[in-house]
Image 1 (cartoon, helix red, strand yellow):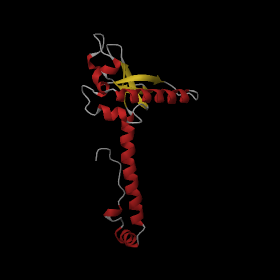
Image 2 (cartoon, helix red, strand yellow):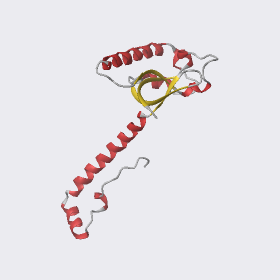
Image 3 (tube, one colour):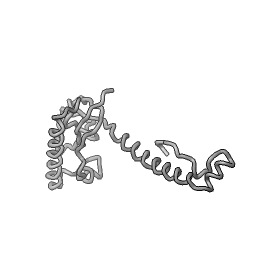
Image 4 (spheres, one colour):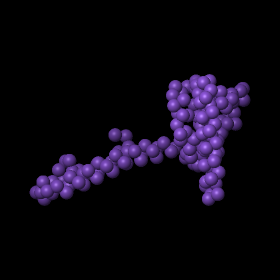
Length: 159
């Protein structure tokens, strides 16, 4: 598997078009706008400008009622209204039978892990504060282990 940095958007046949050559399974896919193999120093400005350009495009699309309807995604308008709708993502790119370049996003897993870790980090910080209390230090000294409320939480992705 090869992952790329990509700019992508949700396929919408009213915006992107659909004909007999198009793949039937494209409706729920993310289309690749730009694929970046290596981000060089001079490409940052280009990527920022490209993101701004596409965000302006979606501001224009929101003015037209027909464009923000999607046949499968009910909250499509809410998704494309977000300021960061078009952003740099990590994904696995591949081509469909119709020649469309689509991507499977991997960045959302990083966001899930970040949220989980922030919660665990906060719980650990609170736990360490509890360990400083004299009654918990005495409990540890007498029993050889910390009280239950002073146990450090571990990282579990699906809890």
